[in-house]
Every structure is written in C-alpha cells, then in structure tokens.
Image (tube, rainbow, N blue to C red; front, side, top):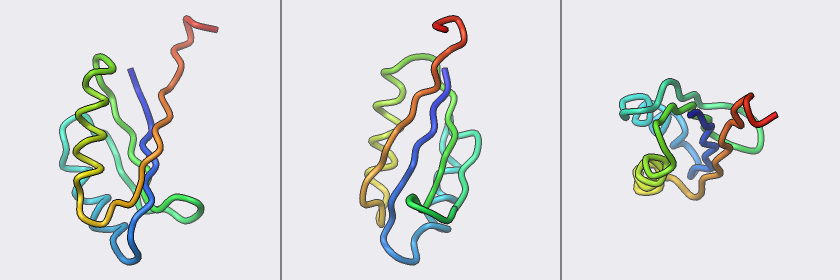
Length: 78
C-alpha cells in the first residue's frame, strides 16, 4: 500500500523535518515544498497498522504542527 503524508511545520523547520523523514523506515521520499503544506512524504507499507506508527513518528517530530494523510486507492477498487 502507498500513501502521502502532508505536513505543516513551524517556520524554518521544513528542511529538517524532510531530512528526518527520509531516514525513517517505510518513507521512500520526503521533500520540503511550497504551497499549503511544508513537507510531502511518500510512504509504502504492508497494512494500515503500520501507518498509525509512521504517523506517530511524524507527529512526535519537533516542529510538526499537523499532518494530513492521503492513502492511495489501489486500481483493483476502481
């Protein structure tokens, strides 16, 4: 399964949070970005229980204010 984690950060923390995220298991990429969110991370995971753990790690990072998760819908559900 795949998902995007969109992160709002405190000012000046986006690069640090993206770098920390890239070192996490299951995170395939993370970038500081412009727009409504400050960091976008792409994750791959075997089941939804793992997502809960990953989100807890993001929310525990110093400077993270909130997260929004968008789980990709598999094609077989179309």
